[in-house]
Image (cartoon, rainbow, N blue to C red; front, side, top):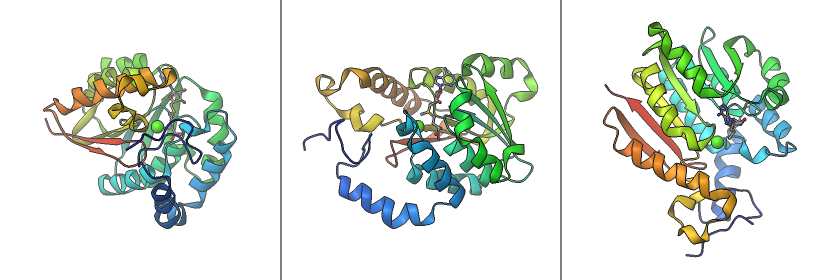
Length: 238
Ligand code: SAM
Ligand code: CA
């Protein structure tokens, strides 16, 4: 089958090799169930020059179920952008739950912040403007943080996913979840390299490396789901 190239008119990236099917899923099952606050934040993000980076709402639906099942008190987010996944997390953890959210770009976070405030969940969020690796290293310097997080969502620079994993696996407790986004990189992980446009090469390589690493990691149970842009769900078991 011919690959859907990056000129896709519907949206980018596209994992399902049928835009009609993607549209069907969104219009039948996702948009009608999307909470108003998330819809508002998604709309506020549409005009952002990098609006395509927001977590895809169908992946958000699966995250919602995971969060509800886990009922996490202490969570971590690496890669906030305008805050779709952050607001989704804040809406689905308990009232006294907390999210440590890290991003190098506060400006994008501020695009979604009014919606987060309106939804009444800002008190759950500790936003840290910084590259994520030094913050994770700081957290690990305090032994009381080890195994203290119930849930982590990782959605920042894909080239650092393996480094994030090495740190976050120590911060999340046994039984906790680490969820990684974009692990199928628009389906390009399975494309012949010569077909991959230059701008997508490094992300594709990073996703391939990460998928190999996580599959061999016996500390986690793991499912690579082909929802959204590929959502890898890992449960720490030792
Ligand atoms: N989860 C977000 C959402 O639901 O809209 C999307 C995150 S976006 C795909 C990736 C984010 O990672 C960007 O906002 C970018 O600023 C941030 N980022 C990139 N490199 C980073 C780094 N080294 N440390 C922290 N954040 C980083
Ligand atoms: Ca993402």
